[in-house]
Length: 183
Image (cartoon, rainbow, N blue to C red; front, side, top):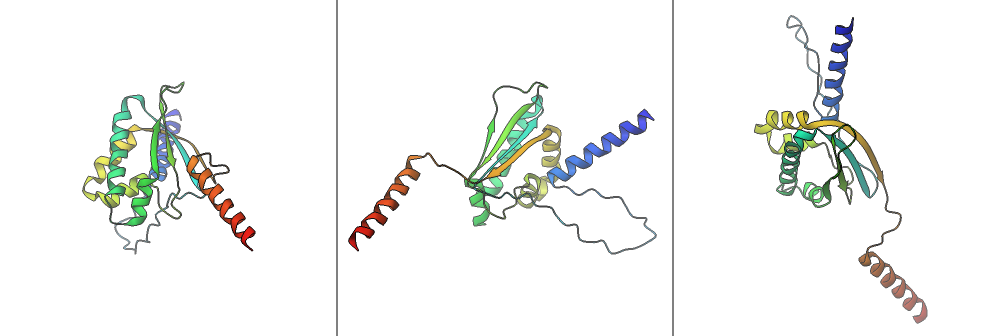
């Protein structure tokens, strides 16, 4: 019974990872029954709001592999001729948390600001589209490095403390006040 439970847990973990990285997993149909395969619907990872913070845990001995995969994501997005993908690259940073987590894994936070509406942030799909010949290698590197999806938070900026935002706001207010006085 323990062997069956272990196998079920392993299969469940693989299926969960496959769903997270955007890889379809399906059972094979018997060869005797030719059927038309339904189109696999690719699930997109999109964000709402102005900013997204997405935290993942990476295995401690695999941080260099994870960072190499994310460098390939940067290449895929920034070298794309698609303006949407270029905008994604311009607003996506990955921060490494300095202190390891209690379990030894290393947390990385994807800081996405501004969020590009309706853009697909699925790491593996971005890589598959840009580097189809590297598909298997990139998948294995990402899969082997990935420990857990820790959190995801999205929202709008409530208060922007940057000087440029303050200057823009005061300029807009001054312009509005000047226009009101001129009337």
